[in-house]
Length: 364
Ligand code: FAD
Image 1 (cartoon, protein in one colour):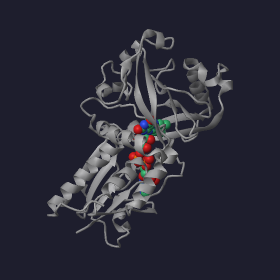
Image 2 (image 1 turned 180 degrees about the vertical axis):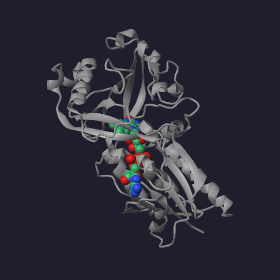
Image 3 (image 1 turned 90 degrees about the vertical axis):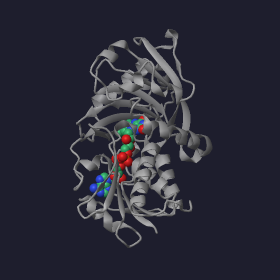
Image 4 (image 1 turned 135 degrees about the vertical axis):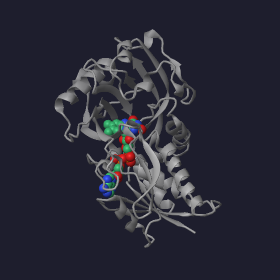
């Protein structure tokens, strides 16, 4: 017996979930989405991400990121065409930021972080290696993902496993049922609509809000990646850099602005982002300040923030159709992607067991 599954959403969450579901012969998977890899739109977060792997969860909620790192590491080592490379990451802390209003990614700045035993080569930095104005710091091996390459690679992996992708815009989650390419109604719907879950009928999750991130993409190179615990301007302005692989440019960030829906990059914020980066890392611009930066583009994306944390959960529609949710990843959708997708597979398997299906199937 096979399950017709329709995944709504083709961001990193929907694509990774579809990929893991499609590894079992028992699942016949269709992805429907308003936006697909290749699109750049304010309603589509995934292309705007850096993206790197800087754990943001607390130790208690670290399951999703912990489970994702081994697979991201494997892909980085074994699949160069996926567009991920290893990069040293440095985090610089200021004591005053640890006492101030809490930033959503605070656990990243802990002095004794849970991820020191997960990400390789973790060490605290000597005072001599800290930029002016910072009190402590650490470094470890992380990755940077060229999101344009990686999302397309995920699409290819899905297609190879028989997943069918279709463009569709739905206004109520129940409509997804009619989109399975099998021609029969879907047995299970997976909701991976990100911020779309705020307005999508049948979901309308009021805990969802945008966390706007403005970035500048430049041609200049900068190793290692850096992140600081705060900026003189204070939240929502933050500071990070990420060097993408394969000529993808360097991301200069940024902002973490909850509740801001603005799609157009603000030139004043852009100037402040560039000024902060050249102050902390003058070498990026050969010591020429902002004038030494070669801008590819300015951008803004909306992280799918959820006040109550990510939703990886199952439920039922009014007509009894089973649904599994996977949305609300805020600023960690890539670094939690495999863990959360694995969580969806577990919930789908639980539904199949309740339906009396055997889980002993031939893997593809
Ligand atoms: P999305 O990518 O938004 O995809 C949603 C999908 O659902 C789209 O295909 C959309 O078209 C579809 N959809 C929505 N509503 C409907 C509807 N009604 N009908 C049909 N389709 C619909 N994460 C990291 O891990 N590391 C980072 O370094 C990082 N940096 C970031 C920097 C910035 C500036 C930003 C903006 C984000 C960053 N993130 C990072 C976060 C990451 O980008 C998100 O968590 C992730 O992309 C969310 O993916 P998603 O698939 O859940 O949502």
